Amino acid sequence: MKTIISEKEINKIIKNLAIKVIKKYKSLSKVGIIGIYTNGVFIAKRLIKEIKNIKNKDLQLGYLDITFYRDDLRFRKEIHQPKETKIDFDVNDKDIILVDDVLYTGRTIRAAIEQVLEIGRPKSISVLVLIDRGLRELPIFAEFVGKEVRTKKNQHIEILLKETGNKEDKVVLYAKKI
Amino acid sequence: MLTKPNKTFNHKHLLELQSLTKEDIELILETAKPFKTVFTRSIKKLPTLRGKSVVLLFYEPSTRTRTSFELAAKRLSADTVSIAVQVSSVQKGESLIDTAKTLESMKADFIVIRHSHSGSPHILAQNVSSSIINAGDGFHEHPTQGLLDIFTIKQKKGKIQGLKVVIVGDILHSRVARSNLWGLTKLSAKVILCGPPTLIPKDIDKIFPQIYIEYNLDKAIKNADVINILRVQFERQLEHLFPSVREYSLLYGMNKERLKNAKSDVLILHPGPMNRGIEITTEVADSLNSVINEQVTNGIAVRMAVLYLLSLNQNL
Image 1 (cartoon, rainbow over the protein chains, first blue to last red):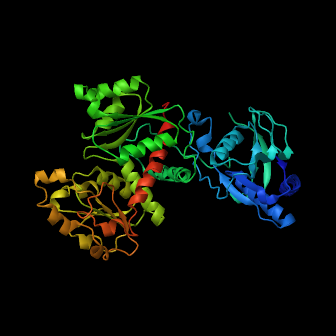
Image 2 (cartoon, rainbow over the protein chains, first blue to last red; image 1 turned 60 degrees about the vertical axis):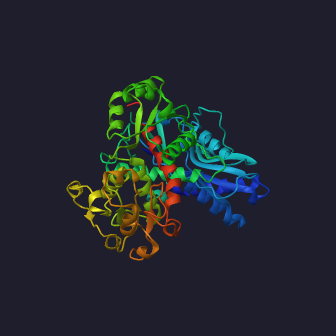
Image 3 (tube, rainbow over the protein chains, first blue to last red; image 1 turned 90 degrees about the horizontal axis):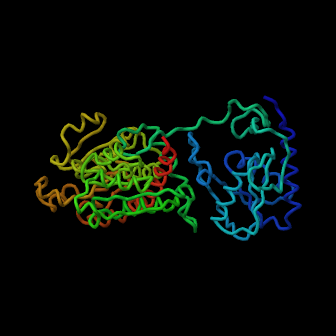
């Protein structure tokens, strides 16, 4: 197992992502952040905190669980305990930013987009991720990418955050056990 | 690695609560929660069971259970067909197994069955490849009603363990009572059964040694957290198990005066359909303590959770 990104670097990446978001949107009050469970929610919270530090503005936050929208439900053996999707703000005419930790095949984002479109009709939807590891299986594109990492299919990448009980934040890369 | 261990639910059918573990029941309750949030959206639909078919086979009358299952399936994007037994081939003498085999040949993924004979869903589960869900069989069980009652209590009280739950009425003929008993005792509630001695099965405390029986309603509901009131089944009066509806109402009807014996925040449940003025007064049914309408809403979420969890095991 190899640590590829340190805590210090993760903080820097999130700060840079916050700056990118601020630059992109003229009116931040029209922006809604939606974190995808589990790590996406924590990254979304950190992003909102950074934006508040810079612009002194609170962005709206929603939570999304994509379990019921997965395309692989019938092929899975184990059960992901689904969590509550909770989006308390009106998504209509908003610029929605979907936040996740890693962008990989694109299937999670596909499911998330479908779910958001069933809740309302946003002005736009874009994607923000901490890491883009490539190897897309669907035509999905992330507008805001913290860091690109070249990986192979037989590797596993994991984001360890303090919020989930880890001692320190880090991103690790290791070979998948088969 | 650091990812949490995933839970498992190794059931293809839901026939009863008796054979489920505490963990199985808790998983169903947890899974029902996110489904409930879908109801407040303008599009109350999830794509989860797209392409699956659910057949509702009801040999006994039902409004809420059948509608609830149908809505649950539809909100998961499954196709549903409801069979009215009165106008089906059953009237020509087709047997239960033959009817089910026909539905299986039509590739029904789920068969939701209600039947007056205890054990009918079990017979289907042994004979067809579809997933079978028991929507009430004879005097045996009505598992999704038990689950939705427990879900409603848990949402309101935050827990089940240690709660004093009184079940009032015709326990002898009630599948709702039996599913409640299995579920509540597995989750360590303190259950008290109350009703006329003729309507409480003898030896029930041998099956459930941890429960209490109290024939006096005022004593039974003292300090109760929850009172689940069963419907008076008028058809039973013919069997002379209680002298008159009027006497039943006097001794076991829930009214405002009587309710004062329970805790002030006691929950009132009733599986429906209610006989207002008999087992429950309108005042109590429409009081702030009553969660009867919420039971109906929660019923859909719980049935969605059951359909979803069973669908994960359909290739077994």
